[in-house]
Image (tube, rainbow, N blue to C red; front, side, top):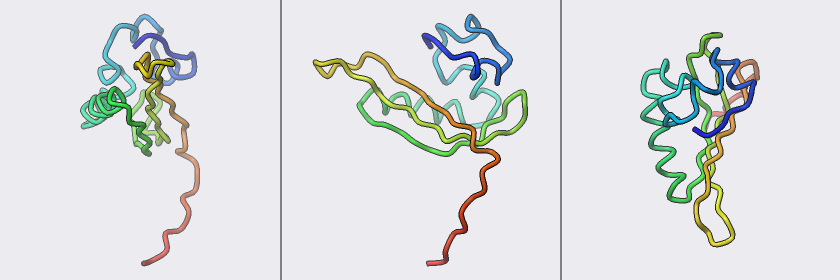
Length: 103
């Protein structure tokens, strides 16, 4: 981790010093949810290889169980060298799911 915004830090009750320098999957956003650290570690590996991942994830946070539309995408410079990986998460806990049609 290199940086995090205030809203994401507030969701885990931490400050920037609590997460900078740690592997992303070892941060409090994921460690309280069984299986999620491993999933995020694998997603980071995929992003390092150039893949973008987007999933809906249920996460256990200090504020309770929340659902996020989560994206992890690689960022490349002009020479196609990986210069970072950007995570984005939108809280969709309160959104109503569309009805699934039977196949």
